[in-house]
Amino acid sequence: MPQPNYPPFAAGAVSVPRQLIRWLDINPQGGSLERTQAFITVPAFSVNYTWRGYSDIVASFNYEGANNFSLTSLFGELPSSPNYTLCISYIDSSNVVHRYSLVRGVNDLIYESITPYSGQLIQKNFRIEVWSTSAATSSQATALILYTTVKGGVDYRYGNDFNLVSSDAICTSFGDNSQATVTFPTNSLVAHWRADTNFVVGVYWNDTVSGQVLTVSGPTQATPAGLNGQKAIDLSVGTLSGSGIINSPLTFASGTLFLVYAQKSAGSGATFFQIADNTSTNVISVASTSALGKIQVNGTNITDGTATSYPTFRVALIDYEAVLLYNFNGVLLDIEYPSGGSTNNITKLNTTASPVYLAEIFFYSALVNQNDIAQFYRYLTQRYAGANQFLLPFTFPSNSVSQPNIKISTNYNTNPGNYTGPAGFVN
Image (cartoon, rainbow, N blue to C red):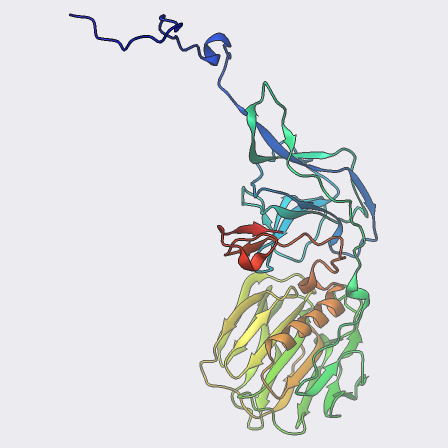
């Protein structure tokens, strides 16, 4: 086979063919390449506080990074039984807080549903939170190193793992707004009974709004251990009865009734309350079967299906559409629609001797809006649980709030209005 024709060599050119010498050929690795990895550091801390019977945030560290990330396996990186609960959170572009627990502390008590962390994406501006436990001191003697999914640009044999972003200074300026009294909503309130006011044993219990009277036969005031030191009326030793208990009948088509009560012990079909119109028809009763909290509406049972802890307060919310049963965390346990029709023109409230503590009664002449519902439950949880579960964490000092992750749909530079590049996240 004839040799191919080559173009003429330029004067002085090397006529020996070039040989490719690769870096890997003369630098054997002894293993696959592996890029360096970024981590975040949680500084050591020690925070003293007064345990209030529930957990809240007592310290935080803010981070403003350059990359979104996920945390890799936390096994071995966090203590197994710390005296604190550690969470990570961030605020998204809609100002919604996303919070995950990294490790739960011994004897914490958090009145909020926090999802355990399992690889969820964390946006670049985030916060590490230290939550209290009953230990009254939360401490970590050495810094915690949490590895992320962010990789470096070199092999680990020629570079080191690196800190993704450093934290701001620790913030411990959290306050507890449970010291500020939250009042119940008064919009459209036409009747209100509370166990520590206008109650005369064996005689009467006056409505604090309109002066309507419930007749007392036997019940006494009590201070149950589970109601945050607040008084309740012990109905296991007597009855209440009232006719014409409000200035004008409450029409459920436009009104709402709240009963705040706690079971004293397990009952056996005992009727707690009976609410009726002046013909004693369309009866609504709140009852207990064994250890289960139950409401009966025209023969329909409403139950949470779980054993009750005695005593903790519950709330029955009754309007023209439905009867709802909530636990003391504001969690809806069950909802039913009366099969026998709505109860209208309420004029009577009667009870029988039953294992229950009655704390408060509210009549509202209008359907309660969402803002008032939120205020109502803040009032109840503060008064009867010694907490304010719907406002956790209690305060956000300005230096404790992580920067929001703001999503933009147009380019951004020194003049955001003229930026036309790709979408992204900015501080």
